[in-house]
Every structure is written in C-alpha cells, then in structure tokens.
Length: 350
Image (cartoon, rainbow, N blue to C red; front, top):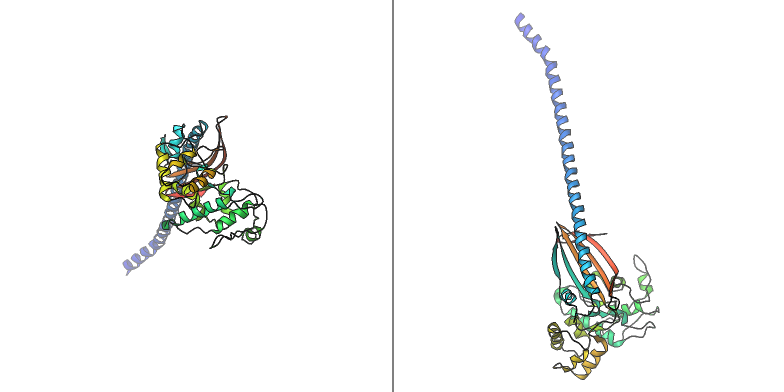
C-alpha cells in the first residue's frame, strides 16, 4: 500500500509540469504561425516591390523607345513632305516599321492626314451643305459597311450629326436625300445625356473630338479612323489615299478603277492629277469630279503618328499629330497622347 501511495504522489506531482509543457508548446506554435504569416507578408511585399520596380524600369524604357520613334517621324516629315522625293517618308507611309533600341523595341506607323476625307468640309459655317462631300462620306460608309467582319454597321445619321457639329446654328439637319436616317443633333440632344454638353457649332480641332458626336461610338471611331480626318485643307492626296477613299471621291467610280490608281501610284507616284485622265475606264464625269477634290501634294500637310515602344511586358503608345512646313523645314507636334499597358492590349491610360 505504501508503494502505491508513493507512486500516486509521484504521478500527481508530475501533472502540473505536463500542463506547463503543453502550454509552452502552444505558445511556441502560435509564435511560429505568426512568424510564418509575417515572413509570407514580407516575401509578398518584396515580390510586389520588385515587380513594381521592374515595371517602372520597363515603363521608362518603353516610353524612351516610343519617343525615339516619334523623333524619327519628326525628322522624316521635316526633311520634306513630298512622297515623290522623300524616300524615308514614303517608306514610313507604306506601312509599319519595327526597329530595336537597346533592351526595347519600337513599332512606328505614319499616315498622311490628307489621304483621308476631311469631315470639316461637309458644310460651310453658315450651314450650307456641300452635297458632293456629303455623298463622298455616305459612299465611304457604304464601302465600310460591306465588311461584315468589322462589327456594327455605321449609320448615315453621323453625316448629318457632323454637319450640325460644324455649322454655327442650332437647327437640326435632316438630309432629305438620305432614305434611311440622315438626321443630325444639336445641343438639345447632347444636354439630355448623363454628362451634358453643348454642340460645338465650329470645326473640329482634333480627330478625338469626333467621339462627342451622336452616332460615333468608339467602335465606329475605330472603324473610320483610317479614312476620315479633321486636319488639312480638304483635298485628298491620291499618292497616299486608300482604295476606299479614292473610290468614294465619285459615286460613279468603279472599284477596279480605284484599284488601278492605287497600283499605279505604288509603282510611281503621280506628278499631276491630270495623269488620271488617261486611265482605262476613266470617264469625263468621273474625272471632273475627282479633280475637284484630289491633289498629289498637300498644301498644308499633317501626319498622324503611332509610335509604340515595348520593354519586357510593358508597352507605351504615343499617338501624335505632326504639322509640317516644308518652306521652313519645320515639323511641329500639335497633339500627343501617351498611354501605357501590358500585352496583349493597352489596359491603362494616364
């Protein structure tokens, strides 16, 4: 019995130590969990910091590449605005070019704005409609709407809405010769929106201003961006214009004739609009209409430039408008927008 009591006392004396050991173990485990959380958070913060540092470095490199591309375009435009003699400019106007710059790359595209239809000339300031130019825009809309894969169609209403935006009055335009649509919009329409604003009643200052016009959605703006402009004196340079723009210069223009003009100028730029007269299929009525709106050299050349710099997975895109003055050999950037993003597309703008 004595031995049993002794054993019981020994066991009872050890129990508090066991409880103390368990408590210490719990504390140690909690500390380990806390340290794990802290280390994980620190590691995450370090990774975020390193990623942001890399993004900042790549953003700076991408911007430098984009600016280098813009400088190339400025130098090319400054050297001369005539594509017949300016070899560098003619190469830039023929399509995108890409070149490497250190740890980055630049993709450069230059377009002469006189290769497009100028919508500032659809009507005069007093609201008198220029029927021939309106027909050109309507014809261009028909040509673009033939492409079923390009998304939503373009309505004729945008022609009347553009006229109302440019003219000086507040009288809504209705194009009576248009069967479907053809109704414009003045300030009364624009003030009903979520963010009210008034109709400018003056010529467009930038291409982006077209997005304020009724019917010109971002999709329509992108679809027409290569074919319409608000810069220049209004004549279309056939040495740079697309087949669609050339075809739209006359409602009687045959598509094959427009393609012949493009193919001919790609071999040798035109020295005179008169050279079109001898083209097979060119009639007097078509030629007389074309020569009113066509030129082979712009009196007041503007160029749109898209220079995209890439570094790592970051890209910077500069969209600019350059105005050239060949007499003084100058080139001025009159508009420039900068945007950043990651591949495959731009996701952020600043």
